[in-house]
Image (tube, rainbow, N blue to C red; front, top):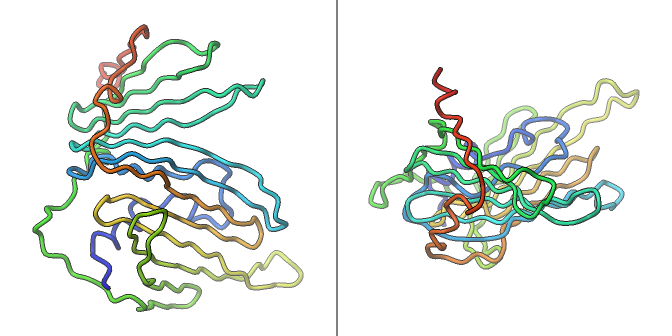
Length: 245
């Protein structure tokens, strides 16, 4: 089995910034939703769990994802207020209409306002034509250089989705410690080439623990179009004119 050039590219273009840092931040990792990729509609649930080196579960983030045939995406980030009540931060990115929407649902103390901004060029990504030839890389192949190793992994089905993956390992010396020890920070990323989403990613750092993100409950097909529209009863604040002043 071979990993397509698109698969290899997305491993880097969609990789969260925290993966490039020696110490990951405790924030939700970048969404897998794949705004702008057309012809591959789906919905799913993304869960990120942070487990410390001693086994303590520190943080858990849940996000619901939708993408339609035209490449519009909706992300519902689950939040909790001080009393523990659940609410949602909703983000819609519409590269077709050229707008980005955001509002809060389920939080009585939040303003009932929908903010509208122009999408950025990076949010206008489109998928390569299905008929386009793609160079490929062999599974099991490894690229190594001092302090870095990357391996193409054997494909597997993850959460019901056929996925192709890579593992990268960065090693470096902790010169600030008396032991001057060498540690390895490992990242795995598994993607679905047909859905064009990240199905699983794992970040392991012996200093801070393991952060794992999984997409589950994947349903293929167009979501209800109403999910990509501003809710009724909310005021709309359009920031697009401000951005062009």
